[in-house]
Amino acid sequence: MNPQTLSIAEQLAYCTVRLECDLAGGGVSTGTGFVFNFAEDGDESVPAIVTNRHVVKGAAVGRFQLTVRDADGGPMIGSTVGVALDNFESRWVPHSLADIDLCAMPIAPLLQEAESKGKAVFHRNFAAGQIATDAELQDLDQIEDITMIGYPNGLWDRKNNMPVFRRGATATHPGRDWNGRPEFMIDAACFPGSSGSPVLLFNIGGYTDKKGNTMVGGARLKLLGILYAGPQHVADGQIVMAPVPTANKPVVLTSIPLHLGIVVKAKELSEIDAQFRKVVNAKG
Image (cartoon, rainbow, N blue to C red):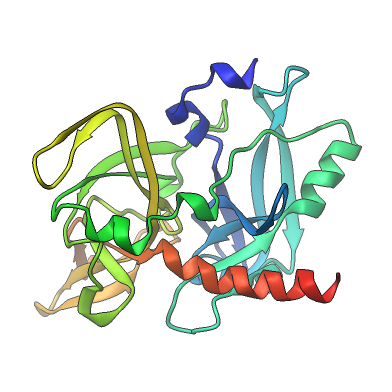
């Protein structure tokens, strides 16, 4: 398949991976990761999978699937390379601030190993240039359509290695810090397995800006942030903020999700980028 025939939306299907973790204490959890290029320098970069720290916490083994690249450079749909890694939690580089629920794992060695075995991988990635700048965020309206890509309740198209796309809207202004933190809220159902999902501003064919001007032609694609938590209405009537669960198992119902999600702003990836750059510079 010629990759140039893929639409932007179709390419987005190859940006994410379904993370499945065997927990050290027993049990299995799922979450979402996406590929991001860190430490960009011309044509060189450090490709890594980004997710929430709580997704890989306590993970002894982690597994995910990558789609094989065909002879034309496009995706060989239905053909995958399975990756299983021991000591999974320790492989991730966390954000330096403990209360920012982000981490990243470099995957260049995995991609090189797959290619050496004749199984080159097809993937698409986000990069720093697609992160919404502060100026772009301030120019957004109070309510904007958003797209979230991931694996709610661990659901995916196993046959074709495809994620689930969902739409929602901003619930607070993405240009303002929710309660003084680098976060904003979205109005979308955030089920277990959605943690780590990229939250995008994605308009095809045009959009209307906050002044009512209609912008026609092309597509608008910006990485706004990464889903990590959601408010829960608990049994005693309180509303608490809790990480989106990764395990999907029967429990006594003591909390009800409010169909809202809390998103870490994508600009926080710059701190992890600085860590990768420090390592790259040290190695020359």
